[in-house]
Length: 135
Image 1 (tube, helix red, strand yellow):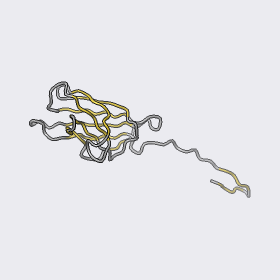
Image 2 (tube, rainbow, N blue to C red):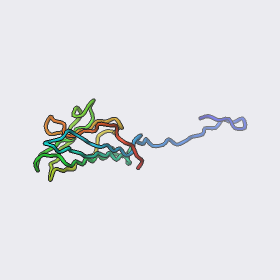
Image 3 (tube, rainbow, N blue to C red):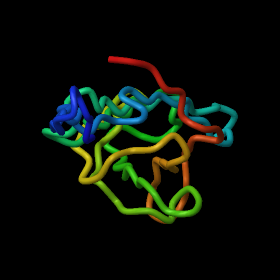
Image 4 (cartoon, one colour):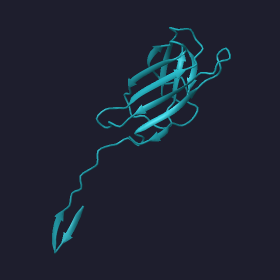
């Protein structure tokens, strides 16, 4: 910005704010169809409070997944619909529950899709937009 003060031109500088996440903390419920009469549930959270230094940490927790202990489930993120994104990694069930965490390689948004899958089958996904909160 250039300002004239008393006939003399001076340059006024304003420091730029660091790039921050539009959605610092995102959470979403995970749901899926019943498996032998048991409805699976879960939640996912992306904590982006350390942007721009590092991308967000994704944590997924599931319960009531009516599959045997040791069943491997994959977390799939992004894509146009559930299960069409990128596989981020896998975890194993114990007592019909499980947990998975990883650092994302991109900034997360409120409309991103997430799915917990067994092979090509979507077990749980987020049917709604992620809820945003501050750090």
